[in-house]
Image 1 (spheres, rainbow, N blue to C red):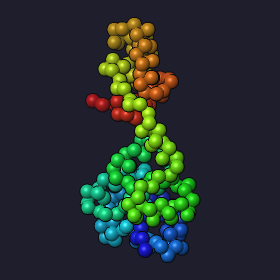
Image 2 (cartoon, one colour):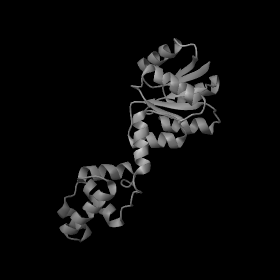
Image 3 (cartoon, rainbow, N blue to C red):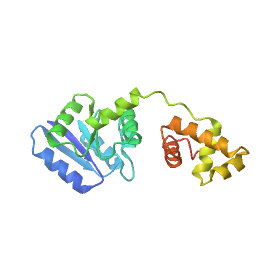
Image 4 (cartoon, one colour):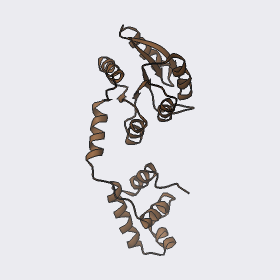
Amino acid sequence: MIGLLIVDDHPVVRDGLRGMFAGDNRFTVLGEAGNGREALAVAGAVTPDVVLLDLRMPVMDGVTTIRELKAAGSAARVLVLTTFDTDSDVLPAIKAGATGYLLKDTPREDLFRAVISAHRGESVLSPAIAGRLMGELRSPAKEPLSQRELEVLTLISQGCTNRETAGRLFISEATVKTHLLHAYAKLGVRDRAAAVAAAFERGLLGRE
């Protein structure tokens, strides 16, 4: 039997998963946790084969939990089970060492097969996640923003208009617009709001 640890901050989700796996003699639920810190303690006590892990939880998030499990020497395979499929969720989890990444709308039998595959050490990805990762791999390398483009986006993110930005940087409004267009192209977006959001997501803004 494959020993499971279910980690999710919603009790109803934990109850549903426990009931689902309890009805199949290939699995046994060894423990549950409501956040990453609890998960580390439980994993140390029950030594699960597979950890079903949510990503966004209080106290300690899923990505940090994956890293801490690895650091603690846990041999458990981590199968992320979440509702989030954005790049900012998927890539850090996989880089941290998750064996698989599934969405919570995954059908029961697919989830069972995924747990068995993860237990074998095989990578498991939902079709939507696999497609997203392939798109990321096939996309051209992202060109970095220039210092001036970052300065323009920083002022825009603070609510400055093109005219105000031009005044603060001692350049023309036309030059501001040109820098913005270059930034849009590099970030793969079409407007100011999306450019600022993408720059924040990449960690390009908000740094000291």
